[in-house]
Image (cartoon, rainbow, N blue to C red; front, side):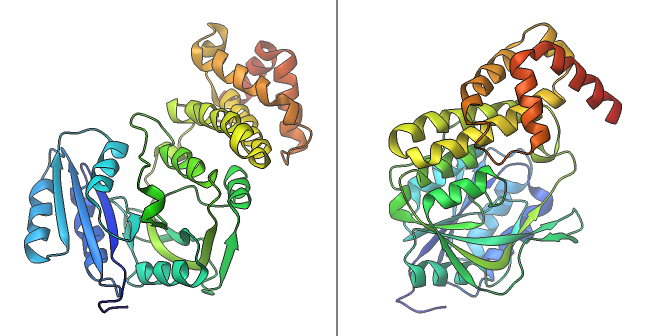
Length: 328
């Protein structure tokens, strides 16, 4: 899709220590079939050759804009890009990922044909050699539209993507919205707050995004700050939805319970024994959501685990800890 009538799409690329991947990422944007692009490369104080690479890309293609800034993390880098973006649509891509040549064109066509403020495509999961590990789509190119609550439910049940990188946003939706610096699981929290305002999502059955899955990445590792914060985030969103979107509250409560169950299964026993904040706060969030347990889609086994922890937390967490250590 080309021509003067094509709306401008701003693609924001946060960059930090991405030297081995940056060329493939940026080239995948420069070779898009949709040419009405503003490619914003945000050098987040990267200590390698990425800053020089960014400047070189800008010299070879006028669509590339570069920001050099002090390191502030992923959310801060994305916000810096949002601050200067002028496109009618906004898209994000992580610097170690890449897109198919038709990806942005498909997203724009989907957004325009449905009138939805958010368009979503599916992904290929790839390894370090870019071998495809998983294809999330049937590649039928069919389009479905979901209400905000339907999409929230799908995210909370781990059926729909919570990433912002496989989506296209109407820029008007993001005009006064920014990522919260320092928050973990920032994509899920950001997207959930946006959906709670009632925006529909159009999903195309097409894998146009290639997500590089690193071994031992945050999303694939066990117990840690990201997992603990996922419980906090879900419970915070439950409280927010009670006020502005009551239909979504039960879905965030369900996610709080499920994530709390995962925390308690993987948490080292010392955290529980010494009543560290990771234990006490997770237990408090879980107990706040226990009234939603019977009405949730959580399995019978997980319901039993959560009920048992609610009654005698230290006893059952000690048992779970021993089982987890044995399995590992």
